[in-house]
Amino acid sequence: MSCWTDQWKDFVRKTSYKQTLAAEKISNDQFWSSYGIYDRALLLAGYPGEILGKISSLISPNSTLLDIGAGTGAFAIPLSKKTSRTIAVDPSDHQLQILMEKARQEGLDNILAIKKEWKDVLPSDISAVCSSGEDAAIVDYSLAAYSLFDENIECFLSRMIDIARKGVFIVFRGGGVDSLNEFAYGRRPYADYICLDHILSDLGYRFDRMLFTRNYSLPVDLVFKQYRFCKKSPEQLLGHLDEEDRLIERSDGKWASFQATDALLYLNR
Image (cartoon, rainbow, N blue to C red; front, side):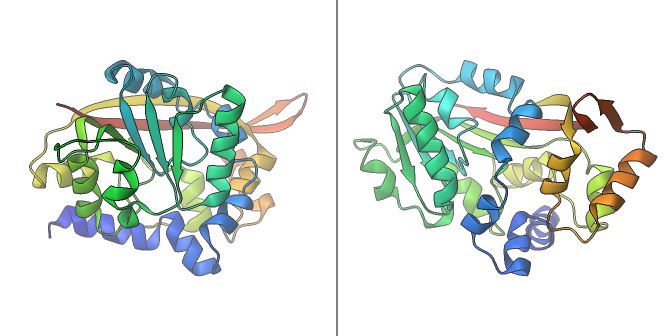
C-alpha cells in the first residue's frame, strides 16, 4: 500500500460524508432526505457545467454507460440522451427516486437504477441489461463523479476500469478546501484528484487530466443547510463569510460567493 492509498483511506474515514453517517448514526437516505435543496444547490453552483460537455464529446452515440454514485442524475440524465442504456448505481433510494422521476419527465426510458454501493454490485446486476457476449467488459463507459468514498480505493477503481470497454471518467475536486469548510469542521485530512492520479498510476494506468473552475453564489440559507452537521452556528458561519468579504446583498437577501475547481480524469481506449 502506497502513501497515496494511506492518504485516501484517512480522508474517507475522517472527512467524507460517510464519516457523517457514522457520527450521526443515520442512513444514506436520511442524510440525503435531510438535504432537500441538493438539486437547487447544484444548479446554482453551475455543476456539472463544462465538464459535462467534455464527457459527452468523448462518448460515442448509442453506447452503454455505468454511472457510479449517480445521485439525482447530474450526469446520468443528460448523458442518457446520447446513450442506448445508462445504469445508475447509488446506495440511496431517495436519490434514485428523484433521478427516475426526472427521467420520466424527460421522456427517458433507457435508465436502469441499481440501489447498491459500488462494492456490492455484481457483474450479473449489469450484464442482465447490457449483453457483453464473450467480452470481459460489460459496458462501454464507466463514470464516477464525487462518489469514490471507499477506503479500498484500488478495488473501486480497478473494477470500474475493468468493466468498461471504451472509456472511464472520474470527476473529483481539483482545488483546495474552501476556508468556510475548514472554519466549520476544523483542519481535516485532505485528498484531491492528484491523490487519485497517483493511485491510478500505481495501478498501471495513465489518465488524461483537465481542470474546470466554477465561480458562483448561493443564498446563505442554502449555505446553512449544506453545513447542517457542523458545530458552528449560522451566525458564526455568516461572520466568517463577512470577514472574508464574501457576502453579497441582493434584493432577495444575503448571498455568499464561492469558487470550486472540478478535475476530470479520463481514459479512452
